[in-house]
Amino acid sequence: MTWTIEAYLAENLIHMSEMKTAGATCGYPTNILNTLIAKQASHYGDRAAMAAPDENNEWHDIAWSRFSADVDMAATALAELGVKEGDNVATFSANRPENLVTDFACFRNRAVSVSIYATSSLEQVAYIVNDAKCSLIFAGNTTQYHIAREVQAMCKSLKHVIVIKGIKLDEEDSTSMLWSDFMAIGAKAPAATRETVGRRTASATPEDIATLVYTSGTTGEPKGAILTHSNYDAAMEAHKRRLTMVSENDTSMAFLPLSHIFEKGWTYFCLVKGMKVSVNRDPHEIQQNIQVVRPTCMCAVPRFWEKVYAAVHEKIASMSPVMRAVVGMALKVGRRRNIDYARVGKKAPWWLETRYKFFEKRVFSLLRSAIGIDEGNIFPTAGAPVSSTVVDFFHSCGINIVVGYGLSETTATVTCFPETGWKIGSVGTPIPFVKVRIGKENEVEVKSPMVMRGYYNKPKETAEAFTADGWLRTGDAGYIDDSGALFLTDRLKDLFKTSNGKYIAPQAIETLLGEDKYVDTVAVIGDKRKFVSALIVPDFDALKDFAAKEKISYHSMKELVENPRVVELMRLHIEQKQKGLASYEKIKKFTILPRPFTMEGGELTNTLKIKRAAISKLYAKEIDAMYE
Image (cartoon, rainbow, N blue to C red; front, top):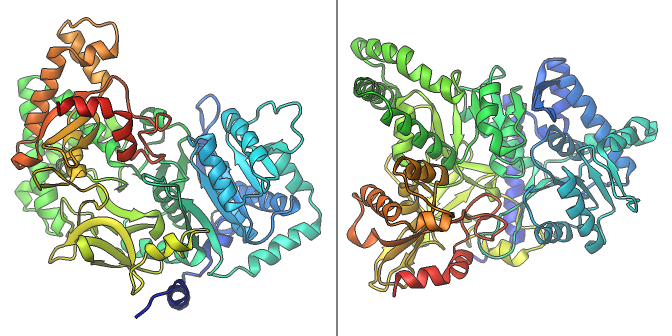
């Protein structure tokens, strides 16, 4: 069979039709995002839909009625400024409630929302705006405003820049406006414009493009995944069926960037469920904001939980021998009750349940309260491999980390832990409507109504992304066990072979070392080399504490990381973490770096994944030195 993009799209239209029928059957309409906010406002009224901090970091609620009014006003303003059906509108900002207002205002106009990471460079923003031919861009703050202004000079399609935060615009700037002025346009618009928006909303179809989600580009230039309203309709229903434990009584913290499909899809689902969404603006303030918000749900990448894990274990290590013994006993009881029984849907024996309740009150509840999640429900975690040790630990403590797997191209979730029967080490089982199979070279392949239409303006890359029979090629290697759980082994492009012919999965090793409190980021090296080595970015705070305790003097971070006692400390910790690895997988040499990997430096993507090719070039001297 010869496969074409047209044939795949035809098949997708069948999926859309099936979803429409399924939606009607279960009372869950198609094109749910177009009218979602207005419908929720009519149901919930002045109940809080969102919360956000002001400039003094004081948190304030935003009612559903206010949210809906803002969406109406913004949608009218977009139409008044000339945004047409099918136009692409960019949002270039850190997390703010206005980001969600702009998304749903676009949907009301049958326009397309294009989210750009707040940390993107001038070149990255210009590429996306040019590729999508965006006519309008929302900029979050002064920095993003000035980048947007430069982009406007480079991109003929960009007509308007709207700045969300109240700042002073450049004197010679005649095409930009503040958010307040933009909303005033919507408030003063004639009735004819509001009627135009109403007609657009009423004529929306499942085939309309909802968002373009640009991949972070670990290799090559970013690609815009075309996600239609039918993709989101299916995703909302699938999550509704899988995540039956969440409700309108939960509170979610939007911690990850709303430009990331994981947070975007999850936040849309929270709004569908009527859940209050607290919008965290600065990721560096997440620890203190969790203490204020006390969320019951929050998406996070594994690194967040690895840091919490390291901090908790450091606290345990500082306890008295008696308290350490009590915590150790509590963890054994917690593991027995939550992993051996609750995980598989079995009721624990009365004697175990009694002991668990004792430790729940005196140990686990205090731990959750210290983190800020004392009322925790579920905590979806994805975006990178998750350490089994970390998952085991938090579930033992009664913290429900729901490990999942997904891509921008699949409208986020492909698999996640079911409520019971999940397996540690896996990324869960396929959610409803999703089929997963293992293809050539053990590549994970996916078919579902949530799979993207293709890459924007990239027919060649779109064709390459699918198999001959229409399954999406994820680029991830893995296997499916007898229970249907998916286990990932590595990114196919990341797998390498040493000069001795041994295949190495670097992500697995990096995840293992990431559990250590002295390690922040690891880049495993070894392609066509004699042995495996690593570049290690240490946890600088932990390293400084070690230096203070050991009375090690230093004048720079370079001097500290090269200190023999620090190098020996790292060697011992690496050896300890590698005990279960085969000899050829073990890191034989390593270099501790004096500065972190950053997006600005070119080592990380906007989603904080390491760029292996870039790191190999940037640190060629350090890498070569390990093999001399």
